[in-house]
Length: 390
Image 1 (cartoon, rainbow, N blue to C red):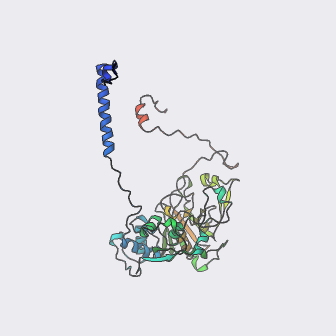
Image 2 (cartoon, rainbow, N blue to C red):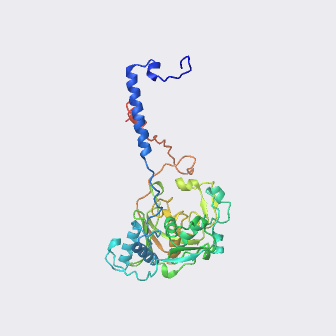
Image 3 (cartoon, one colour):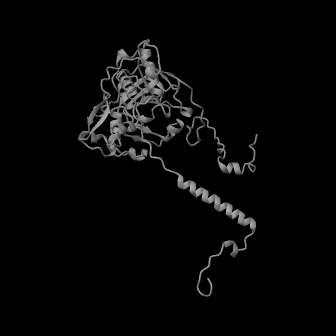
């Protein structure tokens, strides 16, 4: 500004003592900054993808057919998948047919006349829906572990995936369902939670006791045999690693309908029973679901689940879990006294912390090495890291 109050603009480089090298670096910085901002301004945000692709009618028809024959394809969703293929090949084997891929089968599916039907929400359905605490300590204080929503109630009732059910009912908001609303559902025999009561031990069925359950923990499949005849096949989630499902020949010692569950963190993590546990009540969101098939191997059983969407896609704590809609039909084909043959890898030995181990068992304290550093910091400082000791 001069004495007359006129403002003159002067370049910053004429005001501040900056070297020519710094001028060049500054110009380069501003140039790169401008390019960066321009690239950001050109970025467009894509429209969100739909939660689920449109179901393929031929695949859905096959899934419904296999499900009706107790050759479980997993959750119904109208998409080709691993368990649909396994169910198809096992059903073909049971019928003496050549095994094929999904696209090549020649099964007569005319018995599935309609893919969908309609279900109307009833007032009494709300009895099975409610709040489900996340912590075992809070769960143990409840009398019943219900479904956490009508969507969960419907997906289990009609053997399907939540995103699939939402897709076929667009634009209906499944979170806003109420009694009187009608929804489109797969045309399957529904799983009726309201018909289940607590039964400590289901009666033995002598004519079933010659049957054999064979479980392959690598394939994650349970097969029910009567002699050379394959009667049923279901996807399961077995244990793995430290808590692998124990291979061997066992016997069913009892079947409990609507079981409680003894939640013991020490058992779940180390296989060692402790005095700190919670007894979780019955209900579809009990960790072992609505059925427990106890084996002669202590603590091991075949049971339902509170997470049917993860069947075959995760691991258990040593038991074998399957969807509630599958296990409720399986128990109508099996009995206490039957043989169960489990094939698969043995558990990896795991050191048990001293505080968790039984007094009569030797223990080994093992300090695990820290994981290696990852990312750009590891690259920048790679010269300063010391090589591991031999």
